[in-house]
Image (cartoon, rainbow, N blue to C red; front, side):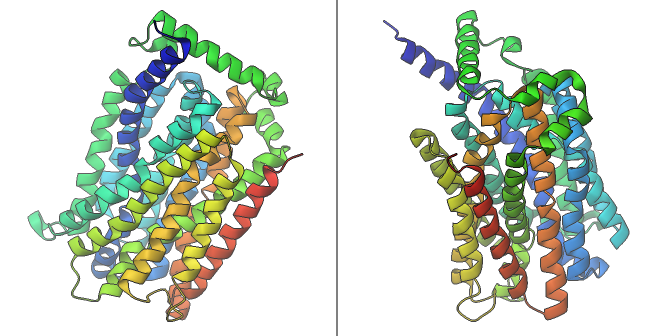
Length: 440
Protein backbone atom coordinates (compact mmCIF):
# COMPACT_ATOMS: atom_id res chain seq x y z
CA UNK A 1 0.00 0.00 0.00
CA UNK A 2 1.30 3.44 -0.97
CA UNK A 3 1.88 5.71 2.01
CA UNK A 4 1.45 9.52 1.82
CA UNK A 5 5.22 9.88 2.09
CA UNK A 6 5.75 7.51 -0.85
CA UNK A 7 3.10 9.35 -2.86
CA UNK A 8 4.78 12.72 -2.29
CA UNK A 9 8.22 11.33 -3.03
CA UNK A 10 6.89 10.03 -6.35
CA UNK A 11 5.15 13.36 -7.04
CA UNK A 12 8.29 15.43 -6.56
CA UNK A 13 10.37 12.97 -8.57
CA UNK A 14 7.85 13.52 -11.36
CA UNK A 15 8.24 17.29 -11.05
CA UNK A 16 12.04 16.96 -11.03
CA UNK A 17 12.04 14.87 -14.21
CA UNK A 18 9.44 16.92 -16.07
CA UNK A 19 10.59 20.43 -15.20
CA UNK A 20 14.20 20.62 -14.14
CA UNK A 21 16.01 19.02 -17.12
CA UNK A 22 14.18 21.26 -19.59
CA UNK A 23 14.68 24.43 -17.53
CA UNK A 24 18.30 23.37 -17.07
CA UNK A 25 18.86 23.23 -20.84
CA UNK A 26 17.23 26.64 -21.32
CA UNK A 27 19.54 28.19 -18.74
CA UNK A 28 22.65 26.49 -20.15
CA UNK A 29 21.93 28.23 -23.45
CA UNK A 30 21.12 31.55 -21.74
CA UNK A 31 24.25 31.61 -19.63
CA UNK A 32 26.51 30.59 -22.51
CA UNK A 33 25.23 33.50 -24.61
CA UNK A 34 25.83 35.80 -21.64
CA UNK A 35 29.48 34.86 -21.00
CA UNK A 36 30.78 33.57 -24.36
CA UNK A 37 32.06 37.09 -24.95
CA UNK A 38 34.88 36.16 -22.56
CA UNK A 39 36.23 33.70 -25.16
CA UNK A 40 35.90 36.34 -27.89
CA UNK A 41 38.16 38.80 -26.02
CA UNK A 42 41.47 37.90 -27.75
CA UNK A 43 39.81 37.91 -31.19
CA UNK A 44 38.09 41.23 -30.57
CA UNK A 45 41.42 42.69 -29.44
CA UNK A 46 43.18 41.46 -32.59
CA UNK A 47 40.39 42.33 -35.04
CA UNK A 48 39.14 45.62 -33.61
CA UNK A 49 41.92 46.78 -31.31
CA UNK A 50 39.86 46.77 -28.10
CA UNK A 51 41.73 47.68 -24.92
CA UNK A 52 41.08 45.93 -21.60
CA UNK A 53 38.90 48.87 -20.52
CA UNK A 54 36.79 48.73 -23.69
CA UNK A 55 36.30 45.00 -23.36
CA UNK A 56 35.57 45.16 -19.62
CA UNK A 57 32.95 47.87 -20.16
CA UNK A 58 31.35 45.88 -22.97
CA UNK A 59 31.26 42.72 -20.88
CA UNK A 60 29.56 44.69 -18.12
CA UNK A 61 27.08 46.57 -20.35
CA UNK A 62 24.94 43.44 -20.49
CA UNK A 63 24.05 44.00 -16.85
CA UNK A 64 23.05 47.63 -17.35
CA UNK A 65 20.26 46.60 -19.75
CA UNK A 66 19.48 43.56 -17.63
CA UNK A 67 19.04 45.57 -14.42
CA UNK A 68 16.82 48.21 -16.02
CA UNK A 69 14.29 45.72 -17.37
CA UNK A 70 14.37 42.94 -14.77
CA UNK A 71 11.49 43.95 -12.48
CA UNK A 72 8.93 44.88 -15.16
CA UNK A 73 9.82 41.75 -17.13
CA UNK A 74 9.20 39.50 -14.13
CA UNK A 75 5.87 41.16 -13.35
CA UNK A 76 4.81 40.77 -16.98
CA UNK A 77 5.69 37.06 -16.72
CA UNK A 78 3.41 36.75 -13.72
CA UNK A 79 0.59 38.47 -15.64
CA UNK A 80 0.83 36.70 -19.02
CA UNK A 81 2.24 33.35 -17.84
CA UNK A 82 5.63 31.67 -17.94
CA UNK A 83 5.13 29.86 -21.24
CA UNK A 84 4.51 32.93 -23.40
CA UNK A 85 6.96 35.29 -21.72
CA UNK A 86 9.91 32.92 -21.46
CA UNK A 87 9.42 32.04 -25.14
CA UNK A 88 9.56 35.76 -25.95
CA UNK A 89 12.71 36.21 -23.87
CA UNK A 90 14.50 33.34 -25.56
CA UNK A 91 13.64 34.34 -29.12
CA UNK A 92 14.74 37.96 -28.66
CA UNK A 93 17.94 37.07 -26.85
CA UNK A 94 18.76 34.43 -29.50
CA UNK A 95 18.41 37.04 -32.24
CA UNK A 96 20.52 39.55 -30.33
CA UNK A 97 23.18 36.96 -29.48
CA UNK A 98 23.54 36.14 -33.18
CA UNK A 99 23.66 39.86 -33.92
CA UNK A 100 26.85 40.13 -31.83
CA UNK A 101 28.62 38.87 -34.97
CA UNK A 102 27.98 42.34 -36.46
CA UNK A 103 30.20 44.14 -33.91
CA UNK A 104 32.63 46.40 -35.76
CA UNK A 105 33.54 49.13 -33.25
CA UNK A 106 33.48 49.82 -29.53
CA UNK A 107 30.08 51.58 -29.69
CA UNK A 108 28.39 48.66 -31.47
CA UNK A 109 29.97 46.18 -29.02
CA UNK A 110 28.64 48.15 -26.05
CA UNK A 111 25.20 48.72 -27.63
CA UNK A 112 24.63 45.07 -28.55
CA UNK A 113 25.75 43.85 -25.13
CA UNK A 114 23.28 46.31 -23.57
CA UNK A 115 20.47 45.04 -25.84
CA UNK A 116 21.34 41.43 -25.00
CA UNK A 117 20.81 42.29 -21.34
CA UNK A 118 17.45 43.91 -22.15
CA UNK A 119 16.40 40.81 -24.11
CA UNK A 120 17.36 38.32 -21.39
CA UNK A 121 16.00 40.37 -18.46
CA UNK A 122 13.44 38.46 -16.44
CA UNK A 123 14.57 34.95 -17.32
CA UNK A 124 16.39 33.98 -14.10
CA UNK A 125 14.05 35.67 -11.59
CA UNK A 126 11.11 34.45 -13.67
CA UNK A 127 12.25 30.85 -13.27
CA UNK A 128 12.97 31.36 -9.56
CA UNK A 129 9.43 32.66 -9.13
CA UNK A 130 8.10 29.89 -11.39
CA UNK A 131 9.65 27.23 -9.15
CA UNK A 132 7.77 28.66 -6.15
CA UNK A 133 4.55 27.59 -7.96
CA UNK A 134 5.72 23.96 -7.87
CA UNK A 135 7.99 23.41 -4.86
CA UNK A 136 7.36 24.21 -1.17
CA UNK A 137 10.16 25.99 0.69
CA UNK A 138 11.73 22.88 2.23
CA UNK A 139 12.27 21.38 -1.23
CA UNK A 140 13.15 24.56 -3.07
CA UNK A 141 16.91 24.99 -2.44
CA UNK A 142 17.64 21.66 -4.07
CA UNK A 143 15.40 22.46 -7.07
CA UNK A 144 16.93 25.92 -7.49
CA UNK A 145 20.45 24.49 -7.14
CA UNK A 146 19.79 21.80 -9.76
CA UNK A 147 18.38 24.41 -12.14
CA UNK A 148 21.17 26.90 -11.53
CA UNK A 149 23.82 24.21 -11.90
CA UNK A 150 23.23 25.02 -15.56
CA UNK A 151 25.55 28.01 -15.21
CA UNK A 152 28.73 26.11 -14.33
CA UNK A 153 27.70 23.33 -16.74
CA UNK A 154 27.41 25.98 -19.45
CA UNK A 155 31.04 26.77 -18.71
CA UNK A 156 32.04 23.10 -18.69
CA UNK A 157 30.42 22.58 -22.09
CA UNK A 158 30.83 26.05 -23.50
CA UNK A 159 34.51 26.57 -22.76
CA UNK A 160 35.84 23.77 -24.98
CA UNK A 161 32.97 24.27 -27.47
CA UNK A 162 33.84 27.94 -27.86
CA UNK A 163 37.48 26.99 -28.31
CA UNK A 164 36.57 24.61 -31.12
CA UNK A 165 34.35 27.15 -32.87
CA UNK A 166 37.05 29.81 -32.64
CA UNK A 167 39.19 27.53 -34.80
CA UNK A 168 36.78 28.31 -37.69
CA UNK A 169 38.57 31.65 -37.94
CA UNK A 170 38.57 32.74 -41.60
CA UNK A 171 35.93 30.26 -42.82
CA UNK A 172 33.59 31.97 -45.33
CA UNK A 173 35.31 35.24 -44.56
CA UNK A 174 34.15 35.34 -40.93
CA UNK A 175 36.35 35.66 -37.86
CA UNK A 176 36.25 32.86 -35.30
CA UNK A 177 34.48 35.07 -32.76
CA UNK A 178 31.76 35.85 -35.32
CA UNK A 179 31.17 32.14 -35.91
CA UNK A 180 30.97 31.62 -32.14
CA UNK A 181 28.28 34.26 -31.62
CA UNK A 182 26.13 32.94 -34.47
CA UNK A 183 26.42 29.22 -33.71
CA UNK A 184 25.91 29.69 -29.96
CA UNK A 185 23.01 32.13 -30.42
CA UNK A 186 20.92 29.91 -32.71
CA UNK A 187 19.94 27.33 -30.01
CA UNK A 188 18.23 30.03 -27.94
CA UNK A 189 16.18 31.08 -30.94
CA UNK A 190 15.10 27.51 -31.71
CA UNK A 191 14.41 26.56 -28.09
CA UNK A 192 12.25 29.66 -27.68
CA UNK A 193 9.61 28.16 -29.96
CA UNK A 194 9.72 24.84 -28.09
CA UNK A 195 8.77 26.63 -24.85
CA UNK A 196 5.32 27.40 -26.29
CA UNK A 197 4.61 23.68 -26.48
CA UNK A 198 6.56 22.16 -23.61
CA UNK A 199 6.38 24.55 -20.63
CA UNK A 200 3.12 24.67 -18.60
CA UNK A 201 2.22 27.95 -16.89
CA UNK A 202 1.64 26.12 -13.60
CA UNK A 203 0.38 22.86 -12.05
CA UNK A 204 -3.17 23.48 -13.28
CA UNK A 205 -1.92 23.48 -16.89
CA UNK A 206 0.31 20.40 -16.65
CA UNK A 207 -1.37 17.49 -18.50
CA UNK A 208 1.03 15.00 -16.91
CA UNK A 209 -0.27 15.67 -13.37
CA UNK A 210 -3.22 13.65 -12.09
CA UNK A 211 -6.02 15.28 -10.05
CA UNK A 212 -4.52 13.64 -6.96
CA UNK A 213 -1.12 15.10 -7.83
CA UNK A 214 -2.57 18.59 -8.18
CA UNK A 215 -4.48 18.32 -4.91
CA UNK A 216 -1.41 17.13 -2.99
CA UNK A 217 0.76 19.84 -4.50
CA UNK A 218 -1.80 22.56 -3.74
CA UNK A 219 -2.02 21.31 -0.17
CA UNK A 220 1.75 21.35 0.30
CA UNK A 221 2.04 24.87 -1.08
CA UNK A 222 -0.89 26.08 1.05
CA UNK A 223 0.64 24.52 4.17
CA UNK A 224 3.96 26.11 3.28
CA UNK A 225 2.37 29.55 2.99
CA UNK A 226 0.38 29.12 6.21
CA UNK A 227 3.50 28.04 8.11
CA UNK A 228 5.39 31.15 7.09
CA UNK A 229 4.98 34.72 8.25
CA UNK A 230 2.27 36.46 6.24
CA UNK A 231 3.79 39.18 4.14
CA UNK A 232 2.12 42.54 4.66
CA UNK A 233 3.08 43.51 1.12
CA UNK A 234 0.64 40.94 -0.22
CA UNK A 235 -2.33 42.98 0.99
CA UNK A 236 -1.41 45.50 -1.68
CA UNK A 237 -0.95 43.02 -4.52
CA UNK A 238 -3.48 44.77 -6.73
CA UNK A 239 -2.09 48.26 -6.14
CA UNK A 240 0.27 48.26 -9.11
CA UNK A 241 4.01 48.22 -9.75
CA UNK A 242 5.17 51.40 -8.00
CA UNK A 243 3.33 50.90 -4.70
CA UNK A 244 4.58 47.31 -4.67
CA UNK A 245 8.18 48.41 -5.26
CA UNK A 246 7.79 51.15 -2.64
CA UNK A 247 6.72 48.52 -0.12
CA UNK A 248 9.70 46.33 -0.99
CA UNK A 249 12.05 49.30 -0.77
CA UNK A 250 11.02 49.82 2.87
CA UNK A 251 12.00 46.25 3.77
CA UNK A 252 15.59 46.23 5.05
CA UNK A 253 15.85 42.49 4.41
CA UNK A 254 15.45 43.05 0.68
CA UNK A 255 18.37 45.51 0.57
CA UNK A 256 20.67 43.35 2.68
CA UNK A 257 19.99 40.42 0.36
CA UNK A 258 20.58 42.71 -2.62
CA UNK A 259 23.99 43.64 -1.20
CA UNK A 260 24.80 39.96 -0.78
CA UNK A 261 23.78 39.20 -4.35
CA UNK A 262 25.66 42.26 -5.64
CA UNK A 263 28.84 40.92 -4.04
CA UNK A 264 28.25 37.53 -5.66
CA UNK A 265 27.88 39.12 -9.09
CA UNK A 266 30.98 41.30 -8.66
CA UNK A 267 32.98 38.13 -7.96
CA UNK A 268 31.31 35.84 -10.47
CA UNK A 269 31.54 38.09 -13.51
CA UNK A 270 34.77 39.74 -12.45
CA UNK A 271 36.24 36.25 -12.71
CA UNK A 272 34.39 34.49 -15.52
CA UNK A 273 34.57 37.38 -18.00
CA UNK A 274 38.35 37.44 -17.64
CA UNK A 275 39.15 33.80 -16.89
CA UNK A 276 39.92 32.68 -20.49
CA UNK A 277 42.17 35.73 -20.93
CA UNK A 278 43.89 35.06 -17.60
CA UNK A 279 44.48 31.40 -18.41
CA UNK A 280 45.69 32.29 -21.91
CA UNK A 281 48.22 34.72 -20.45
CA UNK A 282 49.38 32.14 -17.89
CA UNK A 283 49.95 29.53 -20.61
CA UNK A 284 51.69 31.93 -22.97
CA UNK A 285 51.40 32.64 -26.70
CA UNK A 286 51.65 28.98 -27.71
CA UNK A 287 48.29 28.06 -26.15
CA UNK A 288 45.46 27.54 -28.62
CA UNK A 289 41.78 28.31 -27.99
CA UNK A 290 40.90 24.63 -27.44
CA UNK A 291 43.61 24.24 -24.77
CA UNK A 292 42.45 27.41 -23.04
CA UNK A 293 38.82 26.27 -23.25
CA UNK A 294 39.55 22.88 -21.70
CA UNK A 295 41.40 24.41 -18.75
CA UNK A 296 38.72 27.06 -18.28
CA UNK A 297 36.17 24.25 -17.86
CA UNK A 298 37.91 23.01 -14.67
CA UNK A 299 36.74 25.82 -12.33
CA UNK A 300 33.23 25.53 -13.75
CA UNK A 301 33.26 21.82 -12.90
CA UNK A 302 34.12 22.69 -9.30
CA UNK A 303 31.27 25.20 -9.25
CA UNK A 304 28.77 22.60 -10.46
CA UNK A 305 29.78 20.08 -7.79
CA UNK A 306 29.75 22.73 -5.05
CA UNK A 307 26.33 24.01 -6.08
CA UNK A 308 24.62 20.61 -5.96
CA UNK A 309 26.31 19.42 -2.74
CA UNK A 310 25.78 22.66 -0.81
CA UNK A 311 22.16 23.01 -1.99
CA UNK A 312 21.38 19.41 -1.05
CA UNK A 313 23.02 19.75 2.37
CA UNK A 314 21.17 23.01 3.04
CA UNK A 315 17.83 21.33 2.31
CA UNK A 316 18.65 18.26 4.41
CA UNK A 317 19.62 20.34 7.44
CA UNK A 318 17.21 23.23 6.90
CA UNK A 319 20.11 25.62 7.53
CA UNK A 320 20.33 28.62 5.14
CA UNK A 321 22.45 31.21 6.95
CA UNK A 322 25.93 29.68 6.77
CA UNK A 323 25.15 27.75 3.59
CA UNK A 324 24.76 31.16 1.94
CA UNK A 325 27.29 33.40 3.72
CA UNK A 326 29.99 30.75 4.15
CA UNK A 327 30.53 30.13 0.43
CA UNK A 328 30.99 33.88 -0.13
CA UNK A 329 33.84 33.91 2.41
CA UNK A 330 35.36 30.81 0.76
CA UNK A 331 35.21 32.49 -2.64
CA UNK A 332 36.81 35.67 -1.29
CA UNK A 333 39.65 33.49 0.03
CA UNK A 334 40.08 32.01 -3.45
CA UNK A 335 40.61 35.47 -4.94
CA UNK A 336 43.13 36.44 -2.25
CA UNK A 337 45.06 33.17 -2.50
CA UNK A 338 45.35 33.56 -6.28
CA UNK A 339 47.57 36.59 -5.57
CA UNK A 340 49.75 35.01 -2.92
CA UNK A 341 52.66 33.04 -4.44
CA UNK A 342 54.18 35.81 -6.49
CA UNK A 343 52.04 38.76 -5.50
CA UNK A 344 50.18 38.64 -8.81
CA UNK A 345 47.11 36.88 -10.16
CA UNK A 346 49.18 35.03 -12.76
CA UNK A 347 51.15 32.82 -10.39
CA UNK A 348 51.17 29.63 -12.44
CA UNK A 349 48.62 27.46 -14.21
CA UNK A 350 47.83 24.88 -11.55
CA UNK A 351 47.93 27.21 -8.55
CA UNK A 352 45.74 29.73 -10.39
CA UNK A 353 43.31 27.05 -11.56
CA UNK A 354 43.06 25.73 -8.01
CA UNK A 355 42.30 29.19 -6.63
CA UNK A 356 39.81 29.94 -9.41
CA UNK A 357 38.12 26.60 -8.67
CA UNK A 358 37.90 27.42 -4.97
CA UNK A 359 36.36 30.77 -5.88
CA UNK A 360 33.78 29.20 -8.22
CA UNK A 361 32.81 26.56 -5.63
CA UNK A 362 31.86 29.40 -3.30
CA UNK A 363 30.24 31.54 -5.98
CA UNK A 364 27.92 28.85 -7.28
CA UNK A 365 27.55 26.99 -4.01
CA UNK A 366 25.60 29.83 -2.36
CA UNK A 367 22.99 30.22 -5.11
CA UNK A 368 20.54 27.48 -4.16
CA UNK A 369 20.28 28.38 -0.45
CA UNK A 370 20.32 32.11 -1.24
CA UNK A 371 17.12 32.15 -3.29
CA UNK A 372 15.17 30.32 -0.59
CA UNK A 373 15.67 33.31 1.73
CA UNK A 374 13.60 35.98 -0.11
CA UNK A 375 10.95 33.47 -1.18
CA UNK A 376 10.70 32.47 2.47
CA UNK A 377 9.28 35.87 3.50
CA UNK A 378 7.79 37.04 0.17
CA UNK A 379 5.00 35.44 -1.84
CA UNK A 380 2.73 36.12 -4.82
CA UNK A 381 3.30 39.46 -6.55
CA UNK A 382 5.76 40.48 -3.84
CA UNK A 383 7.85 37.37 -4.53
CA UNK A 384 7.89 38.09 -8.27
CA UNK A 385 8.85 41.73 -7.75
CA UNK A 386 11.18 41.09 -4.82
CA UNK A 387 13.20 38.38 -6.53
CA UNK A 388 13.43 40.54 -9.65
CA UNK A 389 14.48 43.59 -7.59
CA UNK A 390 17.20 41.67 -5.77
CA UNK A 391 18.40 40.09 -9.00
CA UNK A 392 18.33 43.28 -11.07
CA UNK A 393 20.02 45.60 -8.58
CA UNK A 394 22.38 42.84 -7.48
CA UNK A 395 23.34 42.14 -11.08
CA UNK A 396 24.81 45.62 -11.37
CA UNK A 397 27.73 43.84 -9.73
CA UNK A 398 28.11 42.10 -13.08
CA UNK A 399 28.81 45.53 -14.55
CA UNK A 400 31.19 46.58 -11.77
CA UNK A 401 33.30 43.38 -11.65
CA UNK A 402 34.53 43.01 -15.25
CA UNK A 403 34.67 46.78 -15.86
CA UNK A 404 36.80 47.34 -12.77
CA UNK A 405 39.20 44.50 -13.59
CA UNK A 406 39.66 45.85 -17.14
CA UNK A 407 40.29 49.43 -15.99
CA UNK A 408 42.69 48.32 -13.25
CA UNK A 409 44.54 46.17 -15.77
CA UNK A 410 45.00 49.13 -18.16
CA UNK A 411 46.09 51.48 -15.36
CA UNK A 412 48.45 49.18 -13.45
CA UNK A 413 49.27 46.33 -15.84
CA UNK A 414 48.10 43.88 -13.17
CA UNK A 415 44.94 42.23 -11.84
CA UNK A 416 46.04 42.49 -8.19
CA UNK A 417 44.07 45.54 -7.05
CA UNK A 418 40.99 44.41 -8.97
CA UNK A 419 41.01 40.98 -7.31
CA UNK A 420 41.61 42.45 -3.87
CA UNK A 421 38.64 44.78 -4.32
CA UNK A 422 36.47 41.81 -5.36
CA UNK A 423 37.54 39.83 -2.27
CA UNK A 424 36.64 42.72 0.06
CA UNK A 425 33.23 43.21 -1.59
CA UNK A 426 32.46 39.50 -1.27
CA UNK A 427 33.41 39.47 2.41
CA UNK A 428 31.06 42.41 2.99
CA UNK A 429 28.35 40.52 1.12
CA UNK A 430 28.79 37.53 3.39
CA UNK A 431 28.41 39.79 6.42
CA UNK A 432 25.17 41.23 5.00
CA UNK A 433 23.75 37.70 4.65
CA UNK A 434 24.67 36.93 8.27
CA UNK A 435 22.96 40.14 9.35
CA UNK A 436 19.68 39.57 7.49
CA UNK A 437 19.43 35.93 8.66
CA UNK A 438 20.39 36.53 12.27
CA UNK A 439 17.99 35.33 14.98
CA UNK A 440 15.68 38.07 16.18
